[in-house]
Image (spheres, each protein chain N blue to C red):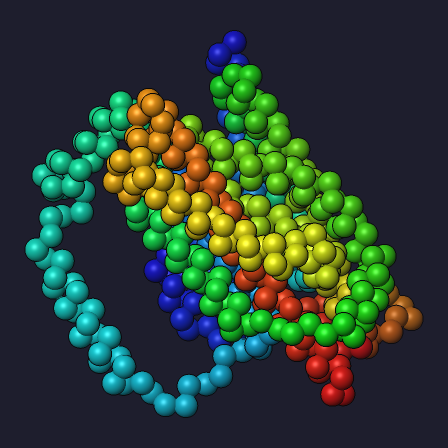
Length: 324
Length: 119
């Protein structure tokens, strides 16, 4: 992995760099599997090797294939980074060794989760119980970060769509039908199964690897595949921009509302035990709702980012076509 | 019976790994884009199928076999489609295949093999 990282740094051809980044994602996913962290490996494989590579490829298609030569050697920046890194490494000397048996995290925190998770929460997948219930507030922060990223992309890359563009784009799409017939037929067969798998992963997060993040990414990947093959305007007819923006906000709202309802019922923020008469049922209900919120936001934000990138790319190409 | 099953599953897994490796050797050694893609496309699909069948024979519970069968079906659909997408992208970008120099009456100016031409 260090070798891949060094290669990413040195190689000037952006396309090769994007491919290497995807390979890095896959290698780290297999590394996580080797360490028995299957949930994380799942998320890393879908996000790092799938969506991230795709979005970077879209960017490279828009910006250019080779990196410009740096005009000056950033020595001052190198010095600052080295000093900061050195201070951080010096700061870790006080911490217990990685994986040592007498670290506080292995004596107090982890045994509590491992031994009491089934009693207190009742879902077999401990990762989900930690992510959604014990550390629900951190996950709320993650969902809000993803939502903020979506807002940032919308603020920076929104394109005013002119109706003249649509007719030209439609004509291109219709003429592409013959060329890409095989792919279109195969993908049309596959998309329902991919969407079904996304729902399976979403609701199966309690019992096996899965959960909202992975499910959202897989759902978005199916929609993006449709958009790649059938044209952006066809995909926008299915997933309209106002709807997807609303859904992304709705996901975060659902998450926050669950916390708020817990407070209204007498518990603290995001304490799911008070959501129903039986604490275990309350925990299940809380986890179900917040995973739903997470899946909604992640899927909508991925779709927003991809649609913004490719709308920008189409806009650039249309402008180039007009100015020629 | 158990020994027979594990022997068979081991054979499938080994064959699948050998196919993967030979696909990798093919990428490195073949001279042209199209031949390389053909090597990888065919062997990767079959290797994935062999490995999945080997895994199915490892532990024949019904649910595991059904899940692995579904993965196999999806792989058989998607992997050839991916190879087709690669090949079509190359053809549509005017990448002509490397042709045998012994063929008479051939227009040599269009044979390039690795770099797409501008036409």
